[in-house]
Structures are given as structure tokens and as C-alpha cells.
Length: 380
Image (cartoon, rainbow, N blue to C red; front, side):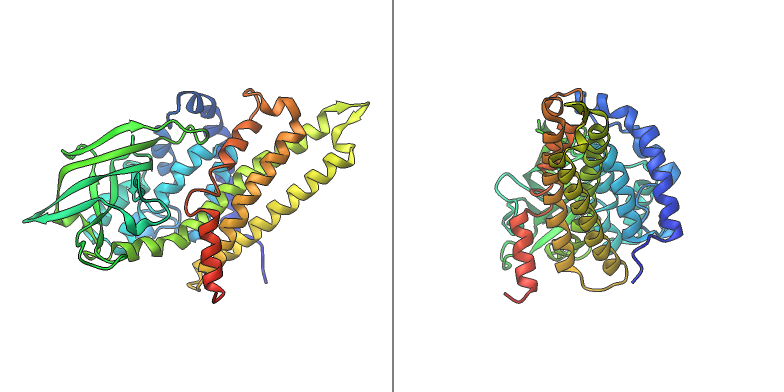
């Protein structure tokens, strides 16, 4: 078995790492302080071909597969998970449902400019009363002639304040059993009845803008339906495996950044006449941190390889997501202990990694949901 990246993926990794360090890193402090995503990055990354690298070349993608997408996500999240999460959404659930199930006209109108960084995508599923139980959403879309009229609320929407279009999950037929009767509909920025009610304040991921949205008699043309009416829940569930793999690399990026800074600090910081890394208590922490990150990366790449080769990998994706997210929490917690009081100071990045890591076991399916999926795949 070959566990090495291909030459193409190595070149992509080198290029994106350089871009992240030179172009993203200088923006992080201001973006975090003001809780605003640097929107111009979309255009810049689109011009360089770093957005939606997994997409077909006919739409401007690099055909680098999910492995290539994961390379980009890890490098971006190593520098800033908040900025990286918005980039991840652009090549993930914000666009892939259009790519997989949309019409050619929809792909040309939304996918092509998304790949170029000219349009920003968002996805609206979660509601104030519907999180892990996605089938319990209340938003509805009533078909009236040539339009759907959407009413409902969405929350925790990444890029909700800056998106040019959003995929909205809504009931089109409430008479169906749970899981059926939900559709996915495209809503463009500026559509009457679509309003951002507030930008949410968060503990972490501050540079990723998150919003609550409301739809009040929001009229959109019927041609904005993505795929078949009533099949949206199936599309959503089908996108989860992909999302869990990519989220694994967001966690890995956070953990790797925390480890790298901890290793440097352990070599520089002296107490009792020698670097603290020479103390077994600190050295063993770093050894376990390195082990956990390596194991998480191997698990996640294995899931990505299975996905790219068209093989069933729901179990592997959930395992990777669960292990990587918990690794991010464990590693950043240990990093805080290595840095001691300095780690708690906002002038150091460690506290940002620590705060950002806490979201990883919650979003894109909680750790409890991942364990339910794994257990089900085991036949339990």
C-alpha cells in the first residue's frame, strides 16, 4: 500500500502552504479581531486555482479529487481555521449538490463563478430547533405557479453574511414520511424576503462569519430547484461522507499548527537551566501529540482515497472525523499546558487553536452522531 501523496498533490501542497503563509497569515489578526472574513481571498484563490480543486476541469476545477481538496483545507486551517472553514464550504456542501444534481444551466451560473472566486456559496440546513435531527426542519417552500414561496429560519450559517447564493433545505411536501418531501432550492442574495437577521458572536472561528437567516414569503423561480423535488434529504445525507472527510483535515490543520508551535516553544523556553522540552513530562506530551496527529491524518487520507476510488467509506469517514476532531481537542489542550500562562494570553496563537478546536467535535455531525454511524455500519 502506498501512503505517499502523488507528485501532483505534493506540488499542490507546497503551493498552497506558501500561499497560506504569505497571503492568509498576515490577514488573520485583523480578521479575528473584527470577526470579518477577508472576502478578497476568494478571488485571489480562484485566480490561482485553489478553490474547488476537486471539481471537473470543464467547470474550472483541477480534478485533484477529495485528496487534493483535503490538502488545501489542511494547509489553510493550519494558518487559520476560521478562514479555512469558509474556503472548505466553497468546495463542499455549498456547491457539490449543484455539481452532482443540478442542471447544466445551474452549474454554469453558480459553479463556474464559485470556482473562480467570483461568487460565494453558503448552505442552509440547521435551524433553531433542528440540528443533528435534520429531518425535523420547519422551513417550507410552497409551490405557487412558476415560483416557490419560502418561509422559515436558519441558524449557524457559515458565510451567511457574505454569500452570493445559498442552498436552502425546505419542505415541499409535508405529507411525506421523515426524510422525504424535503427539497434543496437556490436563493440568491438580494432576493426579496431573504434577510440576514443577525451575525452571531462565537467563542472561536471568529474570522468565519456565521449568521441567522430568515425567509418571509421569499419567492424564487421553480428553476432554482436543485435536482428532483422531495429528494433533497437524500442529497444532504449523500454529501455527509464527503463533508466528514474534509472536516477531518480542518481538525488536523488546527492540531498540526498547535503542535508545531508547541515543539518550537519547548525548545526555546528554559526553566531550571534547560529547555522545557528536555523534561520528560513535556517530551512525552509532544510525543503523544505527534502520534495522534499522524494517526488522524492516515485515517483521513484512507477515507479520502476510498472516496476518490468510488468505494464505500461511510464508516471510515465517520471514524476519521471522530478521531481527528477529538485529536484537535486533545492536542490543543496539551499545547495550552506546555505554554502555561502564555498560552492563555491572546498575543499567542495557542489560545486561538484551543478555542477553534472545541467546535470540531460539534459541527458536521457531533461525536455522538459519528459513533452512531460507526455502530450502525458495524451492524449494531
